[in-house]
Structures are given as structure tokens and as C-alpha cells.
Amino acid sequence: MDQQTRDDLLKLFQGKLNEAMRFYLETCTRCGVCTEACHVHASMGQVKYIAAYRAEIVRRLYKKYFKGRGKVWPSVGEAKELSEMALDELYDAAYSCTGCRRCMVYCPFGIDTQMLMSIAKLLLVGAESEPEILTLLADTSIEKGKSIELFKENFMEGIKRLEAKVVSKWKMEAGETAIPMDVEGADLLYVALAGAHSIIPAAAIFNAAGENWTLSFFEAVNFGAFVGDPTKSKLILDRIVNEAIRLKVKEVCICECGTAFRVMKQLAGKQPFKVSSITEVHARYIREGRIKLDKNKMDGGVTYHDPCQIARNAGVMDEPRYILKHLTDDYRELTDDPRYNWCCGGGGGLVAMGEDTLDFRMKSSRVKVDQVNATGADILATACENCHAQLDNLNDHYKMGVEVKFLSSMIADALVQDAQP
Amino acid sequence: MSDDIKVDKVFDLKGLPCPMPVVKVSKGIKEVEIGQVIEALSTDPGALSDFPAWARTSGNEILKTEQEDDVIKFYIKRNV
Ligand code: SF4
Ligand code: SF4
Image 1: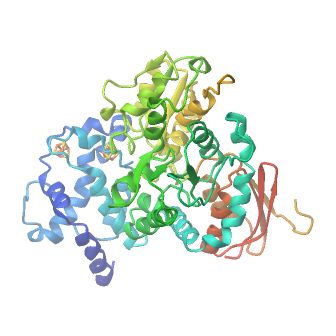
Image 2: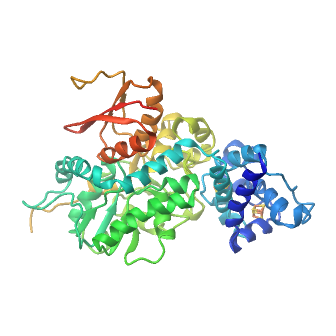
Image 3: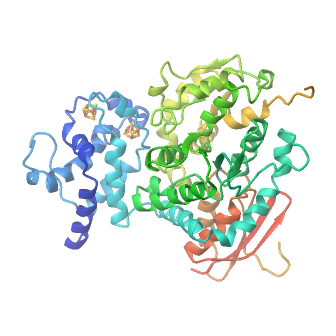
């Protein structure tokens, strides 16, 4: 690595060194409490998958370049030169971590390994050594934001074709639009994903609740966050923020996508609208009596996987359980305290990297499989696209014999539309 | 298949979770030679804006898009 590249990377590193990050970098006592907290280590048992070990990869560079040239705490880990080899280690550490933050809730100091891995990811972006596909996906989202006028019409035509399916779940009055788009003054902007499964059930539920809503032109997911590029993250986020401001909505509702929700909730800053996850919105509809659900639609025991970015990292834990109470009498918990729920093993961009990470994702998530199997449930519900894809892969690979379902599609299928007034 | 376009490889991306359609089309296009054409089948309405944005980003070219019932067909020429 030449001097110029190293200097540029160190500048990126320095830009990340806020007070919290310095605390994380300077505090680990190697107590080992986090060792069994990481699903990767618990499933695969290698030292390199211990949370504190991953953090150490970043910390050694910090000691070398930002802390008295490695003279601080000589007994605790060695300072390390930023080199091609160090980049390989950063890659292994960052892209075997899903950013689930389970280690953080165990660590007595609350050290945030995901944040430390964001330094690793940023250095990889700076060195153009990040997973190419994640950058391509982020760039595609940004391009869509720039040229939306070119694609708008086609997209709206595609959406129109879904309307009959929405109506099959919830009948509408003549003249009503099943999937409203570009409605200025709507109360709620729904930000979905590309797939019809992310739009049809949600639309039926909004219509059932009598919501004044409109569908976003953009997809919710933020690949800039997956690849750890704050500039791209912000550009992707701004597309939605600007749309929400243009349409003067009061609420932005993020579909079943954990990263999208966490990024919008935590990074959008102060805005004239509130940010909700679709699970929060659905719980509200039930609480306010705006939708009614039929419990007889569910066959067999149901358990729920908490998406890390929605539950542990954004606090939405009671709402899915409240919804499930209205969907089934046979709900089975995976864990006594959802904050400690195991990660599915698909976060941090790993699912988006597709088959390249499949073997690792399967091996590193054995503890999740054991946890689900122990409930004996027939249906494994979740509220995140990424988790759903990973759980589907686990279900096939380990022959778990469950049906993996989105919470929103379970709600849409249980909607009661009374014939009588 | 579109009458006027010779397709060299077909990719069925129907019903895949996000972001697999774009991931698979990015990898798939490299399985044909520069100048050849792939046909990608999708059921995602979002693909109607995702694929053109991907093509602009990656330097490839969408020759034609057809919507039939639930299925959207993209004819994409590998340019790079
Ligand atoms: S954030 Fe999750 S995946 Fe990463 S080290 Fe901690 S427990 Fe493991
Ligand atoms: S639990 Fe916290 S302090 Fe203890 S080893 Fe892990 S990161 Fe370090």
C-alpha cells in the first residue's frame, strides 16, 4: 500500500473518531463476556468470530496511528500497520459480522461492535476493497433518485397491475384507488421494496384501516448502510426524505426491512414527519379498532423472529407480540427477553451478497435454527425482508419444516371485512 | 421471447426477495459475451425502475421492456 493511500484511509479513520467511538476503542477489558454472545462464534466456535477479537482488528490500527504510536497499553493487543494484509483482516472481521449488536447488550461497557465494524467497512470502501455488489446496489438506488422522472410512468403502470390482487384481500368502493401514488397531502407515505409481496398485503391493510396513504417511488432498503458508506447512505435516505417533504405527509412508514427502518429512524434527523415501522402502524390499527383480525386463519403454532435492526436496535418488540396475540392462540416465544434474541445471521449485507455468503450464513446461524426448532412451531413469522430471505435459506438447508411468513401477509390474510354494517 | 430480439440467455427472477433480481442480473449478464442479450423475467413492479437505474449505473442497455399479466420481461444487452 502506498503512502498516499494509507494517508487517505487514515483520514477516513480519523473522521469516524467521535467520543463514542473512542470510548469503544479504549475501553475493552477483555473480560470475555461477549464470547458466547455472537451467533457466529456460538455456531462455529473460532476465535476470530469473538466480538472482542473483531474489534481488536480495528483497535490495533487505532493504537498504531491515533494513540501515542502504539505505546499505550502494550500488554493489551499489538499495534498494527495499515497494509493490504490488514485490509484482508478488516474484511474478514466486518463481513462476518451482521451488525446485530447482541454482543453489545452483554458487554458490561456496552461496546458497540457494529460501530467499530463501520470503521472497517469505511476503510474497505476507501481502498475499493468492499464487496462490489453492495456498491453497485447502492449506486443503482442513487441513480434511481437522480432519474426518477424517466422511470416513473413505467413503475406506476406496474403498480396499477397489482391493484386487483390488493382488492382480492380487501374490497374497495367503486372509484377508490387500491394503491395510491404521488398523493400530495396524504397522511402517510409507505416506503416498500421492489417486490409485489412488500406492496400487496400492506396496501390491503392500509385500505382496511381507512388510511389516507400514498406509495413511495423509492425502495426502502439502504445499501449505502450495508456497505458502510455514509455519503451514499445519506443520498439514498434523502430521496425518501425529499419525497415525504414534497408530499407533505405526516408519517413515513417503512416496510418490513430492518436496515431501512433503523437508518430512517436514527439518521434522518429532525423532520416534519414521524418515522414508523409498518409493525408499529399495524399494532396501532388493531389497538384503535381500525382493523379486525380472524384468529381462525392460522393453523399450528407460531413463533416470531425479532429482526435485530427493528427490535434490539430500534426498540420495536412489544408491537409484533401484540399483533400476534390477535392472530393466534398458539404463540410460542423464542426467548424470554427479545433483546437477547439470536440474530438470523443474514444482516450487514450478507444476504444481499447472495450465494457468495450462503455457506457462511448457514454455518454461522446454527444457534438460530436450534432456537426455532425448540419451539416446535409450524410458522416462523418475521418482519424483515433480509431476515425472511435468510430464514428461508436456513429452513431449506436444515430441513426445519417451518413456514416462514411475513407478519404483514399474515395480517392481510386474516382481515375481517364484515358484510353487515 | 420478443420477435425482433435474439436472446442468448434467460433468467427467471420471479418472486425473488430484495435485492436478488438486481444481484442475479448483475452476475448473469457476465455469463454472456459483450453485445449479446439476456432476457430477465420478474414479478417485481420495483424492477421497472430498478433495472433501468441498474443499467445506467453498470453501463448495460435495456433494449425493451414488456409487461404481460404479472410478468415483466426485460431484454438487456451487455455493453461492458
Ligand atoms: S454485532 Fe452481532 S455479529 Fe457482530 S460481533 Fe456482535 S454479536 Fe457478532
Ligand atoms: S464484553 Fe465488552 S469488555 Fe468484555 S471482552 Fe467483550 S467487548 Fe471487551
